[in-house]
Length: 583
Figure 1 (cartoon, one colour):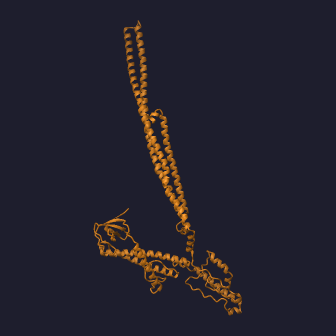
Figure 2: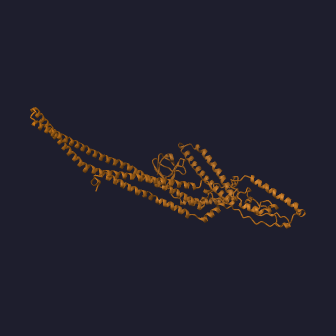
Figure 3: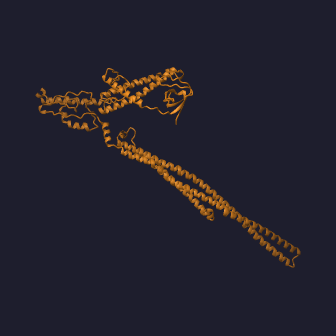
């Protein structure tokens, strides 16, 4: 069943139905567009949310990320950021695969429908024009036939009139004959027009309009099919990203699982452990036998006076819990020598036996004034941040070790650069056409100075670490120990032992590295443009036109590491070959 056969007389219904279908497509496109806007706004709000709660660089929150519960929250923020990206991907795919495609197809359908309706209108106008001609021919035939009847009646009446002349009778007969002839012509024309109209009407209702209606039916079915695919894409677009969204949610669950409360406690201890010893017991001072200035491990290096004894409990609480105290800690450093305590309950001073009151006042002046003076001096003394002496022992050892590791990395970079410059200088000396060896002298000198400076700093920080009770694990680049000022001290037994042990560690680590090293995968190929002898250490010879595998590309020093098929590796001048890297 088709529209052309069953709905041959429902042109207006077909017109309204096809227009309604196109309106539905347009409505669905607008619906999907609003959905994409919702997804984009949702993703934008999620990104703003994660940005709002993400720690700022260098902030206190970023430093707390070493705790598993803080790191888990940061992982959740990252997963939510990825989740927002998937919502944006949903909006983008819906816009491209549904909105844009359906909008483009909708324009094509509108143009096609317009074309079919124009064809139907032309066929209708053509049939109406033929019918109009038929109607005019019919009316003319009717009019001329009446005139012919009138002329015949007039000729008959004239022929019967006795008073009419013969000429009048002949004239009347001729007029009747002419009218009858015209009427016959109009009759024939009417018959032709009627035949023509019936033919066109038959073609209109049985050929032209059914064909147009069937085309409109095919167009509408294609529209429905395309719209159904759009409905399916609406669900498939989100279904395709569900696995990734599931991974984001799994990452959030994993972040919660990775939280380790015990490890966080250990991290806090490791981060803030000072290394100080707990204060010792305060010794009993018997005033009944005289003032005994006893000192304890937790007191200042100056003897206690009577005023200090009155407020020692208050000061003890103040030292332990008041972080905003302006008075710096006076705990003795590991390098300082504690004062010799006076013997407890020792013999009283002779002066005290003669005048106890004056002796107490003198002792107050002796103990309080130097204490105040020492506090003022400590306030004005600058903090030694280079050696981290302002930090507690444990934190100082960690900072020194970190500083030693950083200097070791910088020294290794300078060493690699120095070796590269020496290699380049050797090549320039053997191949003057490649460059002037003297041009490398400033760089070599500067690199040597940097290495010497870094070695001095390394030994200085290692000596500080040894003083702090730690031991560096970094690679030693000099066989001489240095003091705090960076001066060499080869006679130090500690330096000799440290050098021996560290060198043994170096060799062991290097041997393990070479045993486990595998051949690196080629990253490209190169073709030699010129012959290269490869006589220097670390280089490899090549012949013009030879194809080699590129193992390491040029890092800015003018040399590229290559390998032959037999496994031989070495460096060649980058300008001596055409290099093609893999994508």
